[in-house]
Image (cartoon, rainbow, N blue to C red):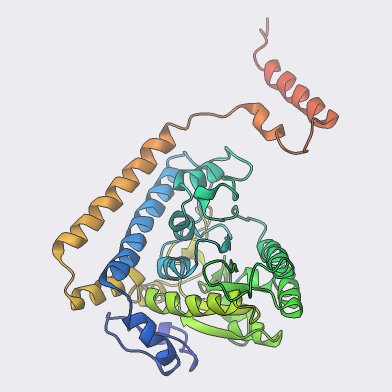
Length: 379
């Protein structure tokens, strides 16, 4: 198994071994006390969220295969990085996802069907980030890397407006932005880090290194661990086992606390694996081996956390209840997706401009006439 996996960096933060035993790496020692202070309810919620979002994700993948969605980006295998980091954020923090952060969005309050609507082509954005029920969660970004600029701009505003660094932990705000190893090679990310470091923004850059930028392996993208890129800009950075939900929670919690205190930005590389395809339009069998996939499957974040909970004495009733909720969420997703129906042709012209616009009106009329031409009697 080990030959198929990249070697661990000595600085890697890991709390749980792949078999679910508590086995902190040397770099994890500063986080152990926080992890040990977590309650049984906290630990069980982490597990529940991972299992439920995987069921949702797999149902959404099936729906795409059945023609209900135009596209779906699976999050299979990345649940621990997302669940741990999302639970580390406070209610007042601002979340900037990429397009695979299904667990993060659900934890923050976004209705998963709103993600479905995006991938079905029924909405320009998906949800209102400023609706309180959505937990300051900004919309998905398919233009990779651009969300880091958006996040940095908002974080600069928080700094300028005195909304961080006041010493009031219940009110101070921070920003966390998610992106992948492929996006980390985009110029936008590096520009964002320049401004974040220059203005000492209250921000956490959370990189999910899932080993593949579509078909390009991370070994081709970078000759050094990706977390070191943040260090190059003067941003304190670390690497965490992204398949360890406890480590992901602990390092993100500390980083966000430091960001809220205006100690400057932080960068985290969560080392994980994209167990599924990049999107449903991708075929990973064309560029990676079953040996690699099998090796990473043995580091499955859900299996690891389940083993840990079993060691702690979690009951069979608990696991059965989680599975029942996961099935219910999957069923609800399928039923509500099938009930979405079609959308109005006019939707694509709404909100392109803030006010009514002659060009949009003209294009709307053209499309209506074009579609009507197919209904004319050929006789």
